Length: 394
Ligand code: GLA
Image (cartoon, rainbow, N blue to C red; front, side, top):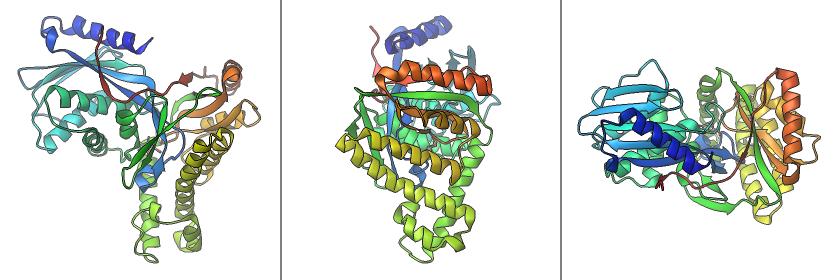
């Protein structure tokens, strides 16, 4: 379904649900996309570089303000409704409203004022596939509330508040990449974000010869969020040790693989491998960007494989299914790069595949995955699109 028709679909559901309660001229529609990340994994919370882009899988909110302090949310995909008042942000048992409540929580904490609202949302970002459907939801709602209640936030403000919402209310200590990519995406461009200075630059990503194909393991191991938070702690442990030898080290961005290696013994096996991967990965993103500028996609692809092996063996956030999908591509001449994408423990691999070979690639991957795991492997060809925006429906 095209973006316009998806948005129109959510709008239709909205009116079917709330027909008698809302005057149609106040209803507005917003869109915020899911993201991919070409390279630079687990580097965002280590103040390093990332290279994400927002894609043509998005969340849509159809929303209108209310006169009272009630919030009524309608999840069109689940056909479920959840209501709460602005004065009671307690966590419901169902997890899907947590993301929306987390945004209201941040608005309160910032001392900003909103009234109630009535919203329906839906879209086509696969949940749990590592495309950051949660960041898309958060950015979309906050962008919408910023518009309808004139909160005066700029895009950076939206990104930072959405990240905090996830950290504080949802409880995942994520970095800034997902929310940033969703809000700042630009058609046909990847974004190199320096997560220390928050400076960013767009690079055109040529899609004439190769396409980006995601292969969705369709698994999300329960370790994902607890191990994510553990990785952050392990990196912090590394920093506290390295700092003793160089007080200027405030994050793993401020050091090098060589320095990490010098202190290998004191770091201990696990923390050493975490710090080694992160410092190498930060360097790899910079090298990969140089290759992109030179138009050397085949060598860029090799860096993606290096990232995967680091995530698999040193950072240990991959899983059997992801490793299997990457290993399946190694002998395939049509694939120049493949790796697990996002936080890990499930979700998608990202593959750079020769355009004309994409159908054969999908067929081979699906057959192999079916044989091994008895799962029909979803494959998504993604296009890079603009970030969070209001949509005017015809
Ligand atoms: C998740 C987090 C991001 C980032 C990635 C790993 O998607 O939300 O902040 O840390 O994992 O690169």
